[in-house]
Image: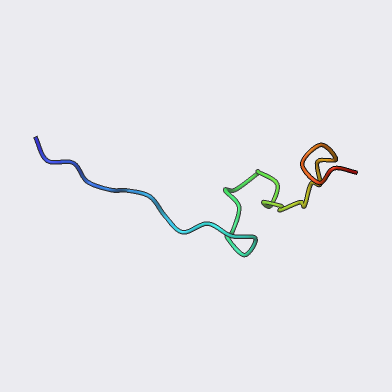
Length: 36
């Protein structure tokens, strides 16, 4: 059996699939990690 890597690069500039919303990237700060 041969394994083939089919992953594709992904970013905010990646075009969305037709009828789907465009991808978005959000920064989330978790207070517990930053001892706030």
